[in-house]
Length: 288
Length: 307
Image (cartoon, each protein chain N blue to C red):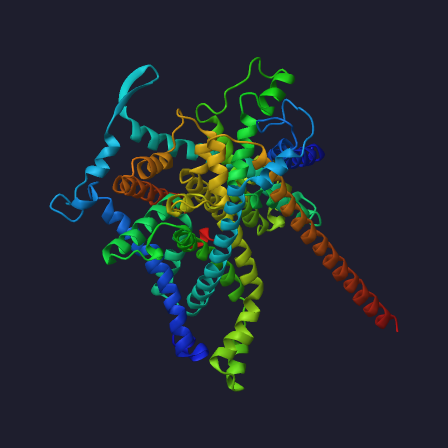
């Protein structure tokens, strides 16, 4: 009975993985089908013309560039704001902390539609009130960046805060006692300790920004990001050029995942060898 | 605060406070207040803005009740305003998605946390993460291909004889529910997995030794322990579903309107930002109410959700 249940669990695990991966496989497969519409049935033979179509699609390439610029800007801003917030939250307590912390967390739960519309209205209204044509107050991708930072910063904050909790504040005390300046304490002691979390936060922010549609849709003005462009293609006249792009993006993800996995296994092996070595050494010592 | 100044000096502390203030005030609080204020203003030509006609009213909110259509419930016909119906259906199907995600994710989370070989676990997690890195629009697009009338799913089901004629998945809410479940199930899986991982396996074994059947072990030991994770997953999935604009737009049709699409139409097609604000505010209000109820029901704090 127990064995049966174990096997059922494994089967379920397998089915779930198929459920998660199969749509991506179907989408990638359609990139090679010589069919005007993106699908894998009916299969009309192999072709690579959709990859050429993708490269020749100027609007898509512009959208791709825009996406990268926005994502980098969001990552940089979100990391700066998120890290500062985490340090601040970590060093205060009581009611103020609860209030600030709840406000920060709640930004993750605000629907993107609301963030998009409110950001758009605020900045354009400010522009109107001041009667300027300055670009900051017009719709455009810079407003998308601001809107996205408003909730992505909270994710960075959570990651950094988690790491801060295991930080030994005595290190900073020691540095101060030894005559380090305030800037030095921050730059040489605290930030290096936080780098793993900051790096993870930056990566999360980057990918969250690429994913984003709701905020961008309302604030972008006439500009395209990849998400918006793909969406408009799906709505009106889709070609498998999108599948070609999707295939490439999935491949990039796969390669990154593979590098990560190989690296992890190597580290795990090194670790295991070191442990074995230590055990042998102790055994030898005891024998002597 | 004093502690901060002592460590990092006045300048750096002030800079950090400024950054946080910029975020919370300029990017969160003020935009939402502006949205709220704007939602009470009428939609006027530019020359009339600020003029005598520009007075506060509840008219934008009242638009929700415009345009009734007839529906019937178990044969009893009744009139319902079309936007109220959209709103109700959005909530209902978001709940369906949340329940579906939980049903799919819970067994897997338990398997990963307690049964699977810990050595193969990182590989498994990585495999699950891959779809999460592929952008949402592409995941919705993938299902658009699969669910198409002449698509692979219908072809497969026809081939194995499960159905006699192809199904129109995109008409109605089937496609939306499938797409949303696929897009957000991982947001349910990881919190529950984290919660179950922290459960001491001895507790399960003790219950087993004392003769508890497997369903009772889950009901009395595992589920209560996983409650914060479940709450967190449910809140995340519900909010993402109710607030999603992409998936309903791609996998829905005219017969399956989502409330965010109504907001989008006011904003982009009617160019009436004020009514769009009113509708967006209604959505925000709903989300706040839902989160509060969920927190009460599960008896957890907002700060626990973030874990």
